[in-house]
Each structure stands twice: as C-alpha cells, then as structure tokens.
Length: 245
Image (cartoon, rainbow, N blue to C red; front, side):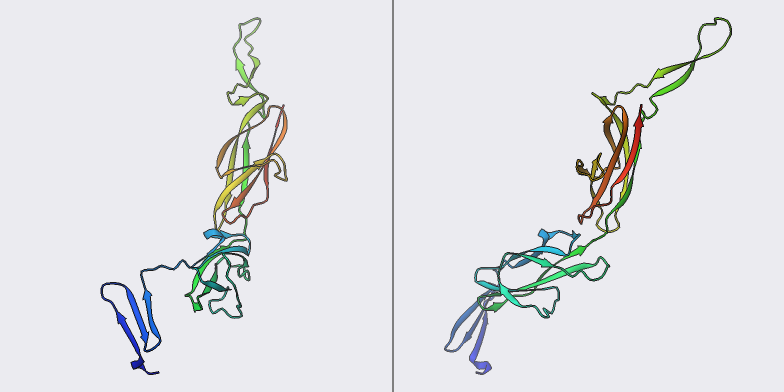
C-alpha cells in the first residue's frame, strides 16, 4: 500500500475527518463527540489519610479492558476487564506529602484510548491542639465588703453573696471552652467533644475556637476534644477538668 492509496478529506463546515483506503471503505472521525472517559480517586477528594483508595472509572460503550498504574509509563501494569469501581493502593513510599497520581487507559472497540489521570495528596499527620475551660462556678461564691450599721465600732463585716448567672438549664451550668487546633497540610475540619477519653459519647461538629458547653452543676467534670483534618486524621484527645462544689 502506498500513500496514494489513502485519501484524507476535511469538510470545512464541520469538524469531521474522513479517511478512505481504496477498496476497503470509508471512515469518519467526528470531533464534536466527547467520549465519556474519566478516572477519579475517592470521588474527587483532595486528600486521603490512607493509601488504600477507590477509583471511579468511566468509559463509553464498547470498552472491554482497562489498564491502571501509579506510573505514567504503565511499567508492569496488566490489562484487566473494564469496571466502573475499583479498590486501589496509591504510592505510599516516602513521608513527603506530595500528590500521588493514578493513570488509566482503556481499550474501546479494539482501540486504545488516551491517558486519563487523577491525583490526591496522602496526608498521614494528625492535627495538634489544646483546650481550655473557663468555669465561673469553679469558685461558687464571691466575697464583698459591705458597710453595716454601727453597733459598737466602725468594723466592716464580710458577707458571702451567691454567684448569679443566666447560663444554666436544669441541673447543668455552662462553661466556655477555648479551643485551638492546627494542621500543617490539609487543614482542620471538624472536632469531636465528649466526656469520655475513648470519645464514645462525643459529638461531632465543625471546628470552632470558642464554644459554650453545659456540664453538671456539681462535682468534677472532664471535657475531651479531638480534632480531625480534611484527610480524615484524628488527633489524640485533649482534656480540661473543672470541679464544682
């Protein structure tokens, strides 16, 4: 076969390319059609705390095989049956939190697709932080000097006045929690607050540096907080304790 056996024709009014080999038919390439190829790690997440991820894969009808690799050259990668979902392990070597890339290509109607990829940052470092509890009832009474009528001398008498606050509900009084957390890579996302060191009773909420929290009106109470970053790493619990009369 020579070059003269192949004819290429481009229609100026439409993005179509035609190719013909004499005696073997005519092929048309339509550049207006966008084929639904894609590859995504953990639903498009930016960060992960584990190298074990899930791939969401998409390819047009007629796709039978796919090839996946952590190497853009697909070294050692084997072809396997096409699937839309697959468990995968990204590159975990090294402590540097650089993006880890997954490369995918497909075999559709016997034709090799282009290269599709996605990346994600492996973040294994948990946040660090602190908690401080401001409890106005830790000292339940205050002392104030009050002038009383003169009975035998000009002595001043000390009178104990009760502490008054509006921040209470039945059997509980409020404290103010001052919370601090930092994460060097993905950033602090949520916090879990509870009264058990195993965080079994913890409430999950968005990170807030200042929070009003209700504790029992009497006795000793310890509050625990753990911070979670956007990669899903949870810090060790931090605690603060107060004792009320």
